[in-house]
Length: 182
Image 1 (cartoon, rainbow, N blue to C red):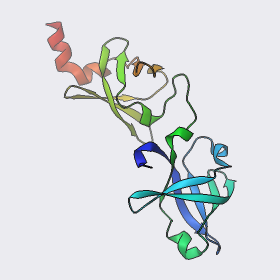
Image 2 (cartoon, rainbow, N blue to C red; image 1 turned 90 degrees about the vertical axis):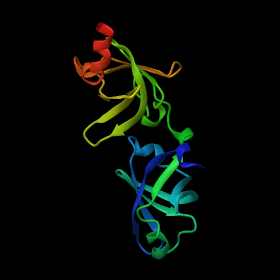
Image 3 (cartoon, rainbow, N blue to C red; image 1 turned 135 degrees about the horizontal axis):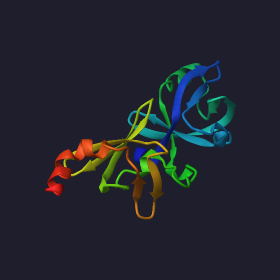
Image 4 (cartoon, one colour; image 1 turned 30 degrees about the vertical axis):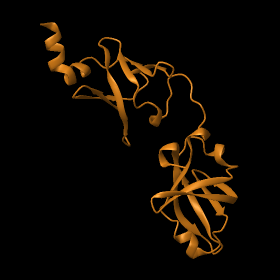
């Protein structure tokens, strides 16, 4: 399993007790969806290693977990700080204007006023705001991901239809817009 075929579930924040239990800090919207998790990939030495879960107890946004083969504090401590991953196929399908950040790179961004303004290169996930990083030729456009801007996701056409705030697109494409007007 490659990391680009997985999504990040969270990380191991600490070892707990003397039997090798660990605390998973989960970075997901719906923690309950993972209460019957049977296995997880842990990122070790640059690769993903599968571990079976023998016991899991949810605690808010974390889970107390016993991993098969991890039976001592020392073994558990070696896993602290490692990333937890699951295959992308386990993500629930989103509908409407909701999307996973990993699925939109390569999507065309169609603005209501300017038409095709470029292609999503990546999503910059800042604590305050997620932002679409859009490339149009050599230009870069940064568009906040907000419900009032993102109007429609067309997965079949690989398009995101937006209504950018007035003046934002012009700010980034000033040279191109002036050339088109002449």
